[in-house]
Amino acid sequence: MREGEDRPLRTGWTTGACATAASKAAFTALVTGQCPESVTITLPRGQTPVFSIAFQGFAEDSVSAGVVKDAGDDPDVTHGALIVATVRRLPEGSGVRFRAGPGVGTVTKPGLPLPPGEPAINPVPRDMMRAAVFETASALGVPGDLEIEISVPGGEELAEKTWNGRLGIVGGLSILGTTGIVKPFSCSAWIASIHRGIDVAVANGFTHVAAATGSTSEAAVRAKYGLAEEHVLDMGDFIGGTLKYLKTHPVPRLTIAGGFAKMTKFAQGANDLHSGRSQVDIAALARLAGSAEIGRASTAKHALDLATEAGIDLAGMVAARAQERAEAQLDGSGVAVGIMITDRQGRIVAEAG
Image (cartoon, rainbow, N blue to C red):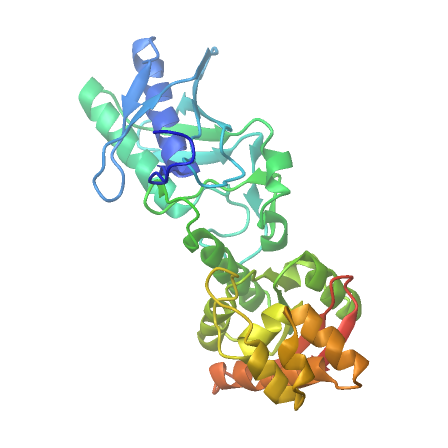
């Protein structure tokens, strides 16, 4: 296809799928002494992709195999990472056990699908690996009692770009995936991270949680209230999804922090604050401020500047409207909600609630 033409976005594979393929290859090599060049695995929805094996290693009591993660066209931080499985035999009847190798994290807080102390290898990838081990053991006529250690070279550094720190996962990445497939630019992973952040907050009894649209507003709300990183949800544009989950998984107190434009869109009725899916209604801002001059603004920031010059607290009005909407969406949950609006330098320009 020629450059510039539209094309379908390429799907990719989760770390869980890659770990499963690597585990199957390593187990095969442990039994046969030969590591396959490629393996086929079965995903939770029945697809059977083929994975090339990019790395193999033999030790006295173990065999390792690795798969390079291909996230397709999704901007995944683990795209191109080597996912390595090292397998060791266990006594018959032991089943399959999992271990976090270098670059894979360990759970330290309650509220996640795994208890504290467990390797951060999520339940679905564990099930996939167990199924692959059972299939391989049956085909080769050997017991399927194994320790599977998953490692990701450089994973600890990659994990700094994820939510793991604030979720209480230390030492590296999580091995994730519910379908085995990464959909390009999917919102589902981000929303799932928000849900897990709320789960951790509830399980640990946090009394005050902030939800921020970006790094600037996050820094402002943390500084004002002295909140640790794990008390802040990286909400991004998904304010509707955040509030919906908080209504059924409530915390005592919530502060929503964001820039003027995004908080204006929420105050005006948007639950998705992405620029491609919602826009600021300048005419509505002018009506709210009671100023025809503001209606001539070209952007939300321009409108705020004009209002400030005219001595109109437009940011305060928007904050109050946003707080009313948030309260309505959380009605009956018991969550006390406040709004904080920041400018581009991180200064607080309005608060409500």
